Length: 350
Length: 229
Image (cartoon, rainbow over all chains, first blue to last red):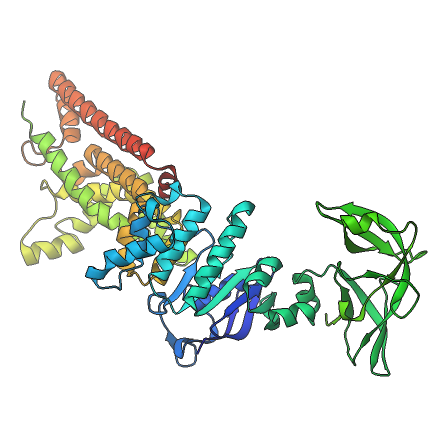
């Protein structure tokens, strides 16, 4: 049970070629804009037609190019929450929700719509038109219209991008509650790694029409394996590496752009090393992965400082280290002795 | 004063507008979905009557519908009906001449329709006919209404093609436009002036109707207007 997707589509400028499976969980599709995340949703919903491949939902084949199956969107039972909600502008909130309830027997429709309006807390807005609603209210109406339609899968296409930031947190919680209650396969498209991390069970990282990395979210954020996945999951410091060798069960390499020899446990390979900005720690004494660093500048964020670091005497670009304002005030003057701990270093393929 | 020309003009304009309404929407909707090249060619053909002199349209219609021409001869031999020089012959002329106004305004409205609304309807399982009549048409209402009124006004004032295909027979094929010309030609200036006044009055009423519709449109919710425009 769940959703199996294996599709290809050529757009000339770029090629979509993805294959993944999602159970009764929330799968986040993370990627930069224009990398094929939304098109994937459109193919599943039947709004776009893939050139080739297969889409199966709960054992039902929605699309199969070899068997010439291509169900119209009407028969797919896939709920699609559009970025701008796509509420029908000529209908009131109540009529919009009722439009989704057409499968129910006529006698039950009114009561079902009333219950759904109540559940989504839009009962008082029933006679309002979409343009009279706030972004959050529009989203609730759109969700109500989808849920009353009883879909088998839920597709959320950048659901919070049209909302003001102060509304976003609240709607995120509300949508999460709706998704948990729904319980079926849900796909969430977003370019925000925080949003994806908070909401998803599993994550697929898109890069130029392909899935670069796929996995349970904690595992994926801990070890993204590829440069794109590391970048999209928020890693900001990268260096090319050279002289990679294995010694006593450890992997030793030279980070060219940082001018440091570093090592990590285990026998691993890669073309690059990534280091998240939060993960360096002050060291008391020299040791492996410990270096004296020169602070070349500091950028003040609302609650943090980003210190720009490089080896003393090294002419390359400095990289960033994030510390809280409290930590910043307690830093010793002059150069810092810093440890780049093993688990914080991610060996990546390009 | 014999009011026949007014009655004749109104019935011709009304019937042609009825035909143009469905034909124009059908063409506009169908063509918006076609590939670009086909769309471009069909667009030129369908818009041509807008820029051609009505006499050219009249000439071309006579070449097809005349009693000795392909279609005209066929209808005459099978049904014994002559397609030209009757009051309803003018409908052929007005439909062809006024069609582009409906077609173009409706197409503009359809093209600015937010297609995600249709997609949303489809994913909810709504039938395509429901989406067309209950979502797409209401959203494009203003453009379609404007096209209809413009087509009616144009059909009402058609002279060139009408005079060629229906001629001027008082009490049978005379319209307001052909009557004015005939009266002026025969030096009946006083009566011609009266008909000119009638024509001005009708045009003013039509324009008032357009303005009224637009004002009603303005009173509607802002977002509806934006999406209908």
